[in-house]
Length: 326
Image 1 (cartoon, one colour):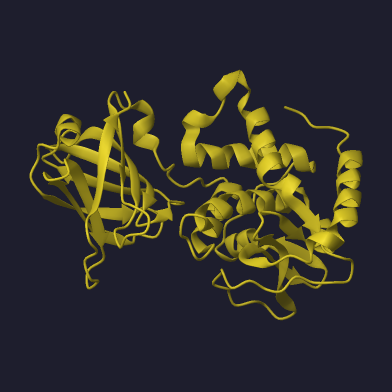
Image 2 (tube, one colour):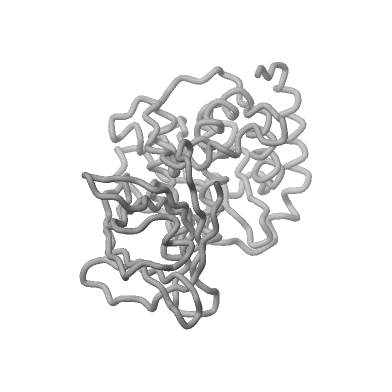
């Protein structure tokens, strides 16, 4: 998919942002947004600055924002759920572009010229070289619009702009389901924009013959929320189920987080005919681990789920159910 002659469209967008920006700036801010690192007159998103600090070479772009948005956006969508690409008969690139424009770019509102956005507290900041500083490029408002510093936006090249838009898309979804920092989002984006894609969240689910989907937890209670896919698997000669989390302990998963539970099959899970089982749930990017517990509650005919790290108090079990997807 090629996007040529987009300069005029982006000039029109910037003019529109400037016209509506004054009114948008008056609203309340939420504690989340996109940061950058300004070194002399060169600006990078915090995501790609940190990636370069870790020795990751960022892939070169096409010099065209729309093409780079589709190129990197498609890789990000593959990471989260490849099966959603190309639905409704639309080419994958077209779908990605439409989603990112609708959910992020159309929500941009420019702040008045000469003003700066206050820094949000949702990121662990790195040590910076002399002459560099962290700046706030964009900030979410409580009404879902995104305040944008147009002066900083103009300093970003096409790849950095694509990174900012994709960051806002991913991290907004993470924040609305419990995440309090953008640290993991930035790690994932740095890998994708350097061509070293992390393990997709649901890779084993793509080709599994049998898949179940489970939901556990309840809002307004101390029990935590979980959402995950399940496949029948064999690990080190043991039959069991692989669990691939979409939501884990209330938080929308950004990096692949998996568990293998031996001695249970999908048919047992659906029928709730299995004994209490313990396993290790692991974040494949950070290597963080939890004790994962899968059981049943006969009084409510529910599955029970909970997870905690060693040394932490054990939360109450989350009640839920599973259904066969295929």
